[in-house]
Length: 332
Image 1 (cartoon, rainbow, N blue to C red):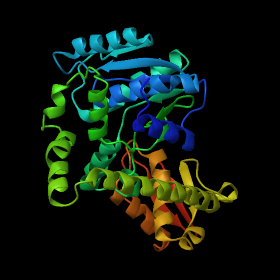
Image 2: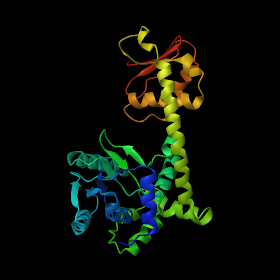
Image 3: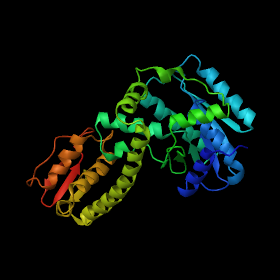
Image 4: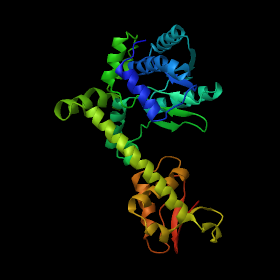
């Protein structure tokens, strides 16, 4: 085996970030594109050092005429490498980026649970992280959205999603595939600029590289990394504030339709950033979809609002009102 600087970097990353240990069962998501081929090649080369059990999973969204041929290509690679292969094919073609992503994670999670894999490993890279940051920034988001592509997160109680290549750029994975003559399957949809992320990749990033910073992908990925640590800290602090604000609410007489009770006097002492995070945490549990800025703002405003103030209904019908020292969120 040829040991390259990229092998050394990923070996160090897995070790220093404690992404997974020796002898773990890894289910590697392989689309056939350069990033996922780079990932599986690196993991297979590192396998003797870590004693992992590695398998490949492929998800066929059925939104391209060549998707079945693509799946066959990845299956043949798995056979050549001597690893188990799992294929999940969508019953109906998946037509949007968001729907495709959600279906893909559900499919991978189901395979992992059925065949006892604790880790799903994907080939997301620094370039993806930069594109996600720009995409969410233009839609309007806080720090959480800007750092959305993290090193690891739970897909379910027993399955963890791992992204070991977040410090590697698309140029590096392309060069690696070229050096090892890996047979990349070119996905025609990656060139279709009707998809927002492709426009960012094909048009915006090159413009920023040419006119502002040739290393803009790495710079944006680094920003996401810094924000991730900030978000983790703020979420922990907000959880502590939330627990303090709900303390004693059980003894306070309220109606049966009440969902949440928050002590305004406790919340008033906290910085606005933590007040908003507490409200966001609560709304994430109550609303049918993720809360937007307006939802969070109108709930936060009740912290200093006059007694008996109340909000208009949130999506799903819940309202919040002020009763003395308490904010009561209740069903209508």
